[in-house]
Image (cartoon, rainbow, N blue to C red):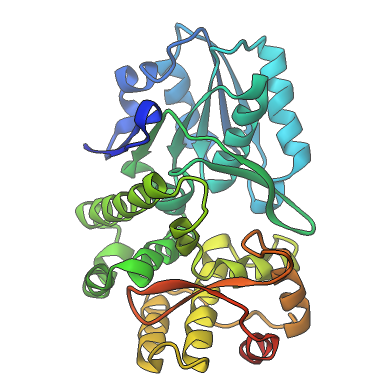
Length: 355
C-alpha cells in the first residue's frame, strides 16, 4: 500500500493506494470514529463491493443507499435522497458518509456531507480510475443543473481516500479509458516527463498492469495533492487542473449528460484547448498532435460529437465557473507541461476551433 498525504494543516488526510484495501476491515472501521455511518453507492458498484464495506462496519449503526448509475443522476433530487437517508439514520454530527463508487457518487455524497449539520466527516472509496486520480482528491463536491455541470456545490475535504486498485478489474474498458484521460491531463499541464512515461506505458495501462496503474495513480494524486495544498479553493493554480474542462463540460451539458462520459468529454476538451493554443500562436502544433495521438492510443474521442453547434457550445462555456464577470478564462498551454490561465480570448478564435 502506498500512502500520500494532503497537507492541509489540521485537516490533513491520507490517500491510501493499493490492492485489497476494501477487504481491510481494520482500515475501514478506523475511518468511522462515531456511531453512525451512511454508505452511498450505485447500482453498478454495490453488487461487487458494498457487502464487504458493510461487513467492516458491523459494530456501527449504518445505512446504505444505492443510487442508479450515471452522470444524469448527479442532481438535486438525488442529493435530496442522500439527505433523507441521513435523516432516517438519525445521524448526528459524528456521522461518517462513505462514498463507494465513481465521481458521481463521490460528488453527491460529499456535497451531502458538506451540507448535513453544516458539515460532517466523509470518506472517499473510489472504484473508478477517474475518481481515484481526480474527483476523490481535493474536496470539490457538487451536483449538476440542466444549465451546467457542478454549478451547485461546496469545498469539503474528505477525512481519507482509500483507492483499492482491485476494483479496476471490474471496471468496463470504456470507463478505464475515460479515467486515463484525466491521467494524461496531469502530464499535459505540468509534467512532460510523466507524459512521456504514459506514452511508453500505454499498452501496460490498457492491459491493467497492476504495478503500472498504481504508479500512474500515485503520480496523479501526488500532483493534485500538491496543487490543492497550494490553492485549495481554486483562486489561481488549481484552475490549471481544469485543462480541457471548459470545452468538455460544455459538451456534456449540451448532450444532457447522456452522451460522452466525463473523461471522454475532457479528452475532446483537451484537444480543443491545445488546438486553440496553437491557433493563437501560443504553443507548437506538434505538441497538440502528440496529445491527440496519445489520447487516440487510449481509445478516446478527440473530436466534437456530431449534432453539437459551435454557437450552442460557446453559450454553455460562458456559464463555466472559471468565467469572471461574463468573460471567459480558459486553461490553455504553451506546450506539453506548460498550462496557463488565459483571459479575453477573442470569441471568433474560440468559435473557429469549435467549428
